[in-house]
Length: 512
Ligand SMILES: Cc1cc2nc3c(=O)[nH]c(=O)nc-3n(C[C@H](O)[C@H](O)[C@H](O)COP(=O)(O)OP(=O)(O)OC[C@H]3O[C@@H](n4cnc5c(N)ncnc54)[C@H](O)[C@@H]3O)c2cc1C
Image (cartoon, rainbow, N blue to C red; front, top):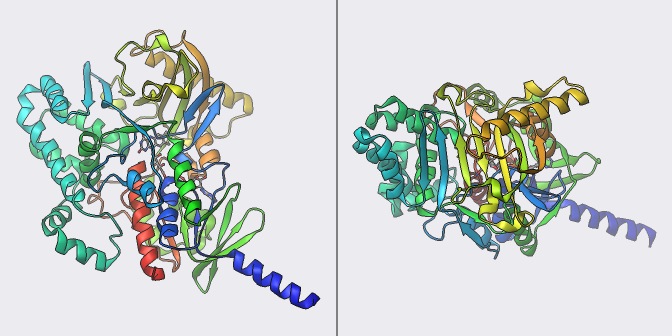
């Protein structure tokens, strides 16, 4: 009797620990993979080291404010075409979100008093830009129109795994011209296209900033495919903010995952990917617990995956080659501010980019990014107040080796510099402060589990467009990567694309 009970218990334990797919991390890339697979009937487990899902698309609450950790300019919530991947990811598991349309993507405050708003209305934006550069009217239109060509190709087809030959054949026969168009743009960068049509050096700098503010590299290094998506979708599906904050996206995906039979465990930090005969078969957690699955997906960055979760000495040659082409981008210095409503003049837009000198665009503390999500959803702050989330590039190296006191003082000094610069566009900001929290690259590393707090990979030199970005399979059988260090890169809609592709590839591999 005793033996039978032990045998059946150990069988039950073994079964409950066995999954079709384990996803390490619940960023949007990981959650889209997990939900796509759970919806197809796979037994899925997501392991998240933090207390809530979302990673860089998470949130935190302080004194009545609900702050977005990172992302707040959200693409992918359109209601038509195929590139509305956040809408589609939620739909797959029977979920949806109320969103609030943003009338402008960005209000630029740039050197030479270049004040341009990227209106949701394409023509309105073009006219505003042309008013500054009338002699480049034709070039401006040709450049942005060519970006539409890229977008129209993408937006014509179902976006799944480019590593799946049968899907590629099907898509090719359904949309031959769109596919050939994409093949043409895949090795190109946005700067190559811009220089074909535009000669004014200041306008080229503006195009650099149009790219830099999401790719963190200038146009010459920004893949044309990504630029085509961003520069067109902002006028097509538009920028839409989720009611209740960006954190809602991950929360809803988790709800959908659980409804579809998937599981998620929090405070579950994976410390090791388990290999048997060179194949990924499971994971080990910080508390010693082990889980096994037929397929393992890492939503951690490639540096974390191949240098921390696997023995760095055994890094596959493909990863070494990738690291020679791509490096870690800087992290950010973040200020999460609560301010009195009167700080913001009427007509203020939600997102701003601020820079005084073009030479500083890529420098640490050069370009300043600002998001004011309470202009779209006032419920995120106490009445009569707004949230200003502002951030600027910052390297981990500048924040190491400091005592607690030095770290605190350095944070305060950096915050004061940012606020003083922002007084140019928001006079009275300092006087109107109600709450302030400063985050550094160390904060990003600690709370997001990202090596050096990096925003993601950037090319070390000019590369052939997106050709160098890896897809989801890795050199290790059974191990896949998803998220911003896979094709097509950073941004919520981009990592959702990566999640669709990863889920698709694994579903085919598992015969689902
Ligand atoms: C300041 C800032 C502003 C941004 N603004 C925008 C914006 O406006 N619009 C936009 O589209 N994008 C923006 N982004 C980029 C966007 O947020 C990211 O590209 C995207 O969220 C990355 O998603 P991901 O799935 O790759 O991974 P992540 O968000 O990094 O999530 C990975 C998850 O894995 C977990 N994890 C890691 N290691 C382990 C482990 N060992 N065990 C268990 N769990 C683990 C982490 O805790 C995390 O939850 C911004 C990013 C930042 C930092």
